Length: 145
Image (cartoon, rainbow, N blue to C red):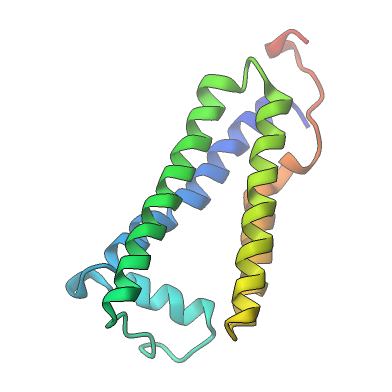
């Protein structure tokens, strides 16, 4: 794996994470909640339409989650474009640590809340987000190290 591949994959990771932000945001308003409801139905392996998003508490949590996810995705994108060249291994390890922290807590919470199917989806999302970042990159000529 090259550093150039890692740098490109960080952008994939940013999009994977950040794309959930707008979906969650749409769940905050009844007229636009369908994508968020569908996402929850899929993650919970429920029949489509069983998630209502009717509770104001759910909509508030969706707003918070959407903001955090979009912000996390933007941060990873910026790390790939502004910091990676100076500290490729530090950026790689930081992103991996964040992904593993998310995976552990989200999966444990999913299981504890009675939705273990989301933990299974988390494995797929983790594998997609991590991609080739699981191993250190070999130095390449583009980076001169």
